[in-house]
Figure 1 (tube, rainbow, N blue to C red):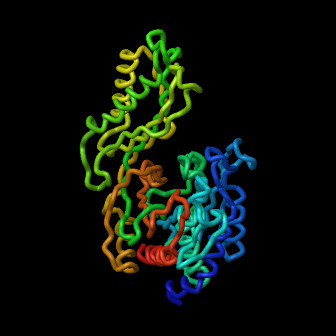
Figure 2: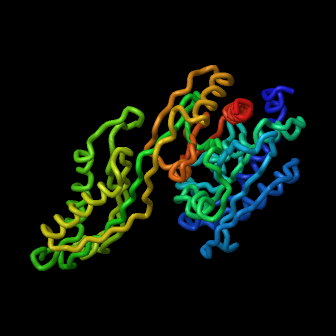
Figure 3: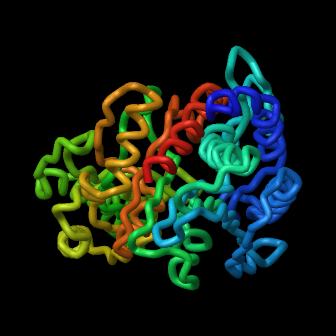
Length: 404
């Protein structure tokens, strides 16, 4: 049976797995959820019931969730050669639904319509998860031993920085080898053309400005933390003109320093706040180090302190920098060849401003690429997955294994 025939015949099972996974919210504590345990349990049972035998479970401790653990699964399909494994890494967790009134259907119940599945998580990242599962099932159900060992990795905590998922696994296990081929099906385009090989350096700032509270009519007797915070956010935004190199690998092709979240300061309009908090999301071209950037951030903070008579402190909720995977790396070239064969298009190598677990692997010297065929519905109301995209991605994964 050809991979396409097998996958087309698996339509009902694909919908079944997507429906099961969507019905169990796996939201991190940061989003008001209880983690991934129940969803991971259901996935593990489904995998066992459908013929997967070699399943390992890794659990990062996290006292914030009721189970006390954040689980990840590794599914192994032994190959003829285990010296270089093919990894497919997807994540189990999802983001909250947001404004429920913007949804046309129950986000936790899959609805199939016009070749699409609607529900929270169906694309991000259950499309990648399911494509990996059904690519693996192709080998199992047809009694085919792949040329190289296949490792399917389903991780926790991707949506909130991966500290309890990929990062924990890298620090606490010896799962990965530097010559492994790693594909992360968690980003792409509607054609399946773009292969992400690099990420901008990521820096999140949470800035706390401390002044002196006073009455709105007496700014002379206080130090307006809100005014100082506004001035500082503009200074930090202006770093786009300091770190001004451009790189056509990325879109946009420049570094960005954007003010985002503001936090509550005072309860009344006629109070000048003594404290103010704001956040910055900075995506910086890899030609600049975060040390260089933070030196300029510190400089801007000191200038605002001197000008407005306040004190500034900040934390970095996320901070990440990583090298790129070479266009010539085996995983990049073999995936491009698989895309050419299945999609009949020439792959395009790109960098992105978003963060993926690929950066964590690249820092360890492991070449990783991010690819999928997506309508980019991640985090949106009425999120959907195109079933044909899922099937074609699974077909491409099968071909990637053949290429390796």
